[in-house]
Image (cartoon, rainbow, N blue to C red):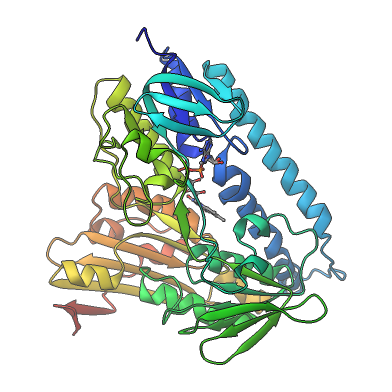
Length: 462
Ligand code: FAD
């Protein structure tokens, strides 16, 4: 539209912002995208990608140990942390450059600066103070770790951001939190040889996940040697002697470790963004309020991804960006679909899950059939590793629909992706029953659980 410098100005070059900018530019729109740190955003630079690389790194110790059962003699293994860090950083930089190239190829203008709103159509580029105008503005600024400023000694602690920047691998670590980031890092650092203690205020790790997954993972972590302290809260962190920190808990524990990591949730990046000046509403957590089409109360301003605190996952931010493009530039109003999102926790063992937990399903359906199998995976027979896998299907007895599918064990995340397709298509238990098994796999258990393990009627086990 003449009169504006751009058709679309995107603030934030992460998963959601980059996808929206690229697609809009490739439709011929005049697009600019501002990023204050590194293009690629949390997922690429200090989230999913570097984390998964660390997950792989942390699994080798067990692989080396398991090899003996299969006849391999493996000499003493030693981790070279600086070498791992350098390799990981190189891969992150490679991906970052692909993001830049993708934007350039689409014709979007890349701006390496913080940007702030000045009004419904005005943005200030902080690096050079320029003020530009756009017909529409998309806020995709993501979220940042909660630094817990109320905790005495919080400045001594690291978050997941700094966990990727540790120059040396600590000998011991206390991690505060019980969500998926806390649990994943506890497993990563334990696998790398760090003595890990997890402290969580809840009664069990990973609230909102199925109770069998939560209890099963907790036990597996404890069996490996990770200390999991529940129903307790760290009240103060202070510096002790010789490079050690001390964390004092509500229940009188004093935990000593080289590093204390806070993994207490993520807060939408809205501070100082100029939302008030532009007239954009936020909720009590600072997340931007949007309607079903990701539009804020100011018609020219949209927001998506973690900054809206709907579901904080990369594929969700990307999906919301694609819906935004459909709605705004293709004349096809499309609401993001947040139902049945498959997801993984890259713990060891891994969790893969889609749909309702047994508890959530019991609140929605009067009668449920629960199919549950817990078994020793074939690999564990020769390796001798005392591990079990868990598979669980939650079925609405009336419609025979599978409303939840949960896996704990190797490759559970990979299975969740495929289970997600089936559940999205409305799969019924009978479809599982008439599907041929792939033998010998662990996943075949999903199609060979013919009789319910138990039923729930009005929430009660019968
Ligand atoms: P982001 O990717 O965070 O991008 C926002 C960008 O905006 C950032 O680059 C930021 O620097 C920039 N920015 C902020 N303010 C401004 C401003 N004023 N001006 C200019 N730029 C600004 N999700 C998964 O699906 N799977 C996983 O396994 C997974 N693992 C994770 C592990 C960790 C440790 C973390 C922290 C997150 C993980 N996530 C995972 C979540 C995932 O990273 C986010 O959901 C996703 O990145 C959200 O995308 P976004 O576009 O909303 O925001």
